[in-house]
Each structure stands twice: as C-alpha cells, then as structure tokens.
Length: 414
Image (cartoon, rainbow, N blue to C red; front, side, top):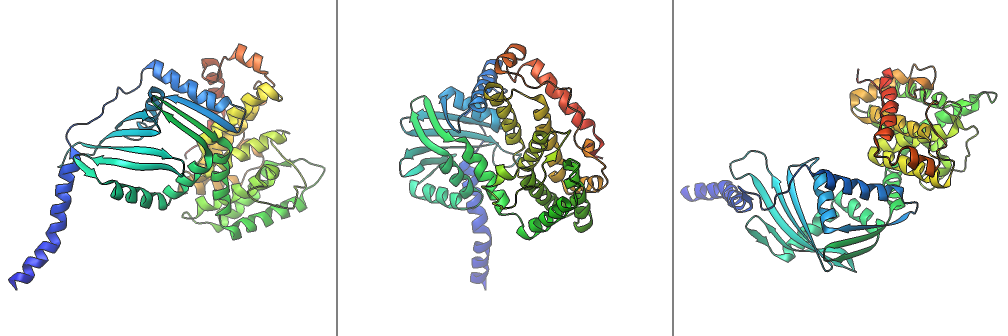
C-alpha cells in the first residue's frame, strides 16, 4: 500500500517539481537586453521614411534595404505596441542573431524571459534555427529545429511561413545590412484568396442570388446606388442571423457585394462568367463605390491597415501616372474601413449595423458628403502643397474626413 502511495505521489508531484525547476532555469529577475523606448524623434522619422518608400513604389516587386539599426528600430517600434519587450538583432554573413527580453506578468519565479537564437539563411530553406538558449537552459539544435518545424506546421504558423516564402524573391544578409526583394502583390493575393475561398459557399450563393434578384428588378433609367445592394441584404441578414452568427453573416454580405462591384478586380479570386449589368455608384461616382467596398472587404478579413496603405499608395501612384491624387477616393477608402469595422468588431456592433442598414433610404447614411474635398492633384502640386503624407496639412484633411465619417449615427458605438 505504501509503495502504491509513493508511486501515486511521484506521478502527481514529479511533473510539478520538474516544471518548477525548468522555470527557475529559464525565468530571470533581470533583462539581458534593454532598449530606449519610446524611440527618439530621429529614429521615428527614419521609420516613417522607410515605410513611405515601401508605400510609394509603383512596382509590384519591391526592394527593401535595411541597416541593422533600422531593423532593430522597426522591430522594437512595432513589438512594443503589444508587449513590454526588448529585441536586439545582429546581422552577420547569411545569419541573423536575435536576442529577446520579455517582461512577464507578476509571478513567483522572476520578471523576465530572456532567450536568444540564430537563424541561418540557406538556399534550400528559408531559415535554419540553431543555438537556441532560453534563460540558462541551452537547447540542442536537433530539438530546437524539431520544435521550430512543428510550430511551422501548425496553423496559423504554416500559412504565415508559406506566405513569406511565396512573397520573398531574394534575401541577402551581410554584416550590418539586410536586403529583401519581395512581391508585394502576393501579400494581398494570399490574404484575399484564402479568405474568399474558405467562406461559406452556400451562404455566399444565397446572397448572390439576392443580388441577382435586385439587379433584375432595377429600373435601368436610374443609377444603381450602392445602398440599393446593401440595404436589402442587411435586412435579410438581420432576420436570419443571431448575435453569434452576425459577424460571419456581415462578412459574407460584404464579400458578395464586393464581388459584384469589383468583379474585374476579384476575378482571379472568385471567377464568374456573369458581368455586372449595372455599375454601382456613390455620389454619382463609380470609383467611390469601388473604393468603399474594397476597403470594407480588406477590413473584414483582418487587413484594415493594409486597406489604408493601399488606398494611399494608389492615390500617390495616380498623382504621378494617372488622374491625380484624390481625397474623395481616399474618403471612400476610409468610410469603407469604418463600415468593415462596425460590421465585424463585435457581435453587438455587427447586429446593430444590420438593424440600422435594414432601414436606410440612401447611401448618405454610411458615406458622408465629401465632394468638396480636393482631387485631381498632380505629383508636383501634391509635393508643393502637402510635401508628404506625414505633413500637418495632409493630416488635417484626413482628420476632417474621419470627423465627417464618425459623425454619422451608423458609426456610433450606441
């Protein structure tokens, strides 16, 4: 009996003791790395310059060159939005060394999780992990690589790795310098195609049939308003969805309407032989409806920041090569982002949007008056008047747009 109790005691407490000993080895009271945060004005300015260069490039295949200092500032700037963390990256020949100190919540073992590892760039694989050390505990390369590969094979890490591998065309790592050649278009393609092709196809077909009925009943003597498409669909959604399913229902509506409004742009994701019989408009402008629905779509699939970046990038490109920079188009982007946020932020906001959209009379409920905003601005005129998208004058117009959008009752939280 005593032997049985000893075995039982061992089985219960041995794992606890072992885990406690491991925690004592890997958790420490002091950080191995520290950074000066927030970053100083000069470092922030350098980060903005790098991001602006990425956005303003006209080519799908882009080259990004970063010094070791640039890379450390970028990584720490973004990580510290979410964690209390210090990261130090050292660039060597075909190798990246990463040291991290993560501040932990209050516990009985210590205040910091310090770890470091190296990533060796090889032609047959993206990176080979080695020299992993967590606290005072060194992990054998075989176990570290096994853990890394296991982690990579699990969703969403595998999808992220596949997206990175598809995006990157060339990596050059040298002392103090990192050069990346990547296909920016593939980032959008992967995000959009994955979201569109994994949506509930039965529900998508249901709403597409509703759209077909709307188009069939539309009076050709009148322009097709974007509200003519959205209002009846949200009315149906309000009736057929619950609080738990409202977000998903809203996503499907936005996908269905985006497919109709932007059919040529989404053809490679959702092929269709049926061409739109009527273009959809906002303020008698077809392009504004396209901007609105594209941004709403990107926001609902988790890429609101991407929608902002793409909207500004397109207008900067139009300033150089097209019809000129348009704050009206940009307002369509930002209203679409706000619409997508309300549609998917929470079950309560999703259901509230359905209820309000079911009763709308026209598009002014979700798209404010913006026709007085400047447009057709050439590249030369834009630089002369605004300088850059970081200038106070430019930001003032964005604030004016956002104020008008947020003033609409439909975008209020209650």
